[in-house]
Length: 181
Ligand SMILES: [Fe+2]
Ligand SMILES: [Fe+2]
Image (tube, rainbow, N blue to C red; front, side, top):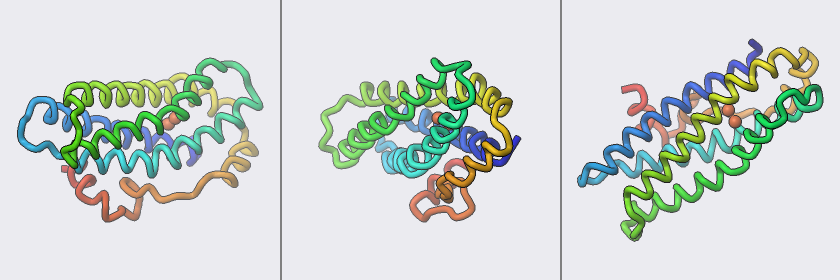
């Protein structure tokens, strides 16, 4: 597998770790009256804005475009994935705002409704990356040539992953500790 696809696959593995941690935090949030770790949840959502939404999905969109120029085999799958890429930031933004409401204690939003909303978002993220891994990436790997990958590489946004990359941003150090503990 070429390095671009390997990186995307590694991102997916990392996102699954975050999804699992957020699900655990939601369990606490739903059932525990003690102050849940809202700041940790906010760090996760903040990271989603900075890396998956800003870097990972645009990288995939670029690859999808090159793939679609060569093959129209599975247009419905790609259509749904592109729609997800468009809608994820809106869903994430709403969750971000609700979380800040809980942190400032100004939200009258019910905890359970919030939790359901986040769980629906996480499930869609999981479905999304599983579809990419199982229903699309094998077609992409089979279809694109070395020249295509070279062209894609010149257009790729180059960015350090601030949580799982070589340089961990100060903001995410406690989040990373939670993930590896
Ligand atoms: Fe994606
Ligand atoms: Fe992805």
